[in-house]
Length: 263
Image 1: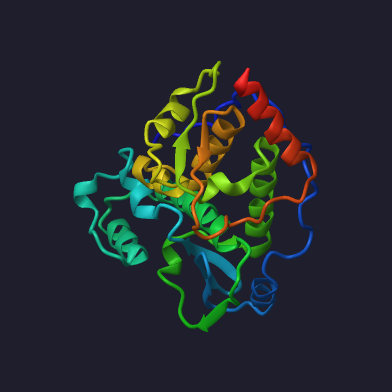
Image 2: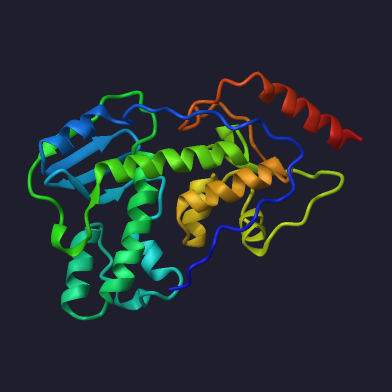
C-alpha cells in the first residue's frame, strides 16, 4: 500500500490565528460507555462507532470512504477478490481466514478508516446518540482503540483544519473552482482534487472518488481555499459539520482576499 504524506501548504493570502479548541468530551455518552466497558453500537448523526468492552473496534460514516474502498483503491487488495457486500467486517474476516489479506496491511488501513469515520461520527450533532448493546462486529479481526485516543485525535484534526483555513464551509458544500489573478502552484495531490471540483461534488465525495481518506481531502480543500483556488458553492444545503469559528478576524480576512484578487 502506498503511504502518502500530507503535502506542505500552498501559499496563503491571510490566515486567522489558531483558536483554543474544546477541552470537554466530544461525546459524554461515549465516555460513559467506555467507563462501563460497554459492548455494542453507538449511532450518531454523522456516523456509527462499534464498541467492544468500552473500546472502539470499528467506525463507519456516510461521509468517509469505507474500508473496502481504502483497501482496493490503490492495490492493497485486488478488487476482484473482495466479496462485495455491505457487511465489511464479515468480508474482512473471510479474507483473513482465506489468507488473501495481509494482517499488517489490514490493521494499517483499518486504523486510517477508523479515525477517518470517527472524525465525522464525533462531529457536533443536532440529534442525540443511540446505543444498542450487543455483540461487536467481527471484533477479533480489528485492533481496538481507546475512546480517549479517538477523541484526542479528532480534536487534533479539528485544530489542524482550523489552522489551515478557519472557514469550515468547504468541508460539506459543493465546491467550485476559483480563478485568482496569480494562482499559486498546486501539488500533484491537490491537482487531483481540483480536477474533480465541478460545482456538484463535495470534499467527501471527491475523497471517495479518489479512494482516499476523507480527512486528507478536507486538508487539501482547505489549503486550496486558503490559496484562493476553490470555494464552496453557495446553496441552501445543510450547514457544515463543524460550526464556523467565532472569530472577528475571519470576515476581514475574506475581504482582504477578495480585494487582492481584484487587483
